[in-house]
Image (cartoon, rainbow, N blue to C red; front, side, top):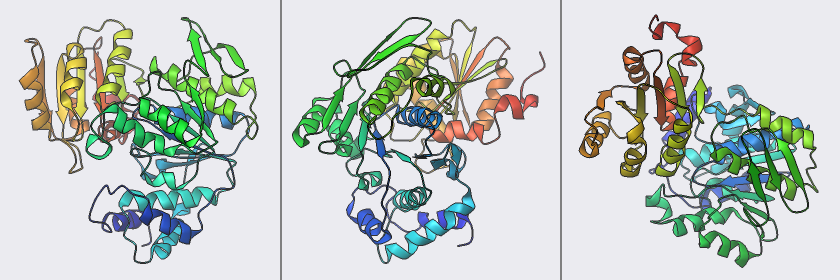
Length: 431
């Protein structure tokens, strides 16, 4: 294996299952690797808001002068996005010896693609002299490969129904799986305003230092600014986070709680908080691309995230017609998605995605048609996200709005060709 692409192809062939939750195999290989972090570790789990939380933590800590490492998944366009060192995606060439190290350490152990790549990226991060490691859980928490690392501080964001085949049928079951990242005696930040009882019960059972939204920290704001109050500290007159959407304020509140809990080992200034929140960037989270027609990119792919997207779209004001490019995995519960955002969408462009796990565009179209009650709405099936976006652009007037949402493959399929406004002016009709 001479290139990153070679290694990734190798990882895809190793294990019979794409997802095989459990820590025994991955922990055995990590032990043989000697994987360890000599710096504070923050682990983030939740149904929605994990990526935004990690990005805000990273931005504030970098503006406080720390060398950061951030692991997250999935990626939007390039695999290297899964590891950011000092704010930049890792170079593919840097990763090669770490993939080789995992291959040597695994011996006869069979690892999934996710487990192998996670170990390689964590091994790379641990060798990169970072001063704080921020780890985003891939699926669940308790049995996710990331959980082989003991977090010095754990953050649990919003919890809702997703991946129920693996995590359980309700919020209580899912909450228990997320709570598996908590550690005895260490800060457990729960930013979900209404967490499942299972999260609180587990935190109390293991003796974690539980920080609850509304009890141990809180936030309030008006149209111009917001403030945060925690255990013995407050911030006032804060500008809203650069990441758009009302839900980001709840994520930011959890971020400040985590940083306050870690203040003895990671002190930060109020200016780092202000600048970090004002400068944070994360593609694909209610990302608005300037120009006409308005273009919104969002990786909302479950009922809870789509509800937040719908609220944010409502807040944008009036548009004569809203076009939606949508593609998603086949295991998603489409009913709540269509029910919540359907009233806002006038024209649908369903797209196939380059993974066998995805729902075919024709199936999405049929499902939408079966529950659509709007006689003035229309839908069509497209072969890929860029074809769907082109179809939307062809039909859109300058005053309209186009929303690209769903799977990372959907938004990434658009971003892969460059930010549409900047890369493809020819896509936009002359006005």
